[in-house]
Image (cartoon, rainbow, N blue to C red; front, side, top):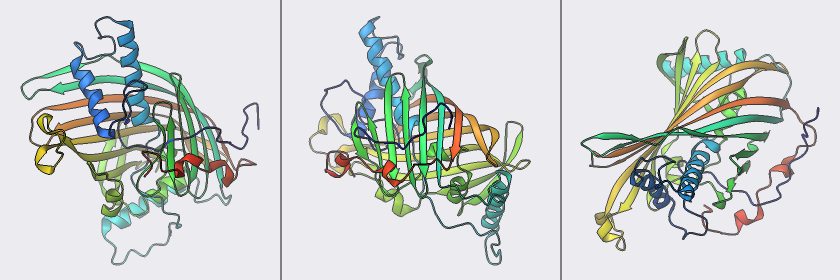
Length: 397
């Protein structure tokens, strides 16, 4: 197994759930706990309120710089640390002999592209059944600029600042995974036992994700071709596009209405969440992955913070888009696995009627150091949720 320990993972502290978008708790430790979206708004207010908008603009105060840096890092880890795929994974095998009679062309075309992808990554010819996977790698995350529009003019705030880190990922089929990610001295631990998805952060504690159980997005960024193929099992081919030097087919799959309603809360409504895969026409490999997630949040008007009725609320829309370039495919036990990539996330905030908006951009560069399949000793006990996930604590859905 080499010098790196690949033993069964033991959860020794509470873990936490995943949120689609900026983290609910981006205020100082010990501050009063507020609603998720109120704290997200606080981060954007802090950006617009500082003279230069960046991490170095808190009246020259070292404490101010540290607070801004901590706030930026938490935003990075919330958005790029461990996002989930838009839809649940389907564990039914994809039929290579799909009868195309009476099937729309865009669906049959998508099915053909997925078969080519499975063949290109070695999944079609491999007889070996993969039950477990271990992967480790390094990341560097950057909080880039924030663009603020007042409706009359646009200004760009902030400076590019980054933090380095590493991660360890375990997976066991069907549907079990765990992730430990450490960046800038902050650790995020997340996992799934196949039924519940949870996450733990030092500033937020342990929470469970709402809605149906969905796979970790990091897994479908070239690490597990079969899981990726299953997500696109009911996709539509919506066209072609050139990505870099590659001509690609575009496959699209969206979360259905029932699942997005399950993920909605009292003051926030998930409107849509779609996944786009760009598959090379030359190699058949997945080289770009993009998902777009739109949420409508009711924001109390300043003069009506107590009476939070529909008539006293302004609707604010938050769209989170993550685009990932997937590169450096290498052979691992007969399978082609991507070993590096780059993700760029954009958070766009705008009012329902206002011309004002805020757009924040962040980036992650990642690479894989090690991948091992069918690791001895890994079992379902390695993915048991923390006990306090069932205790009815705030944030558990």
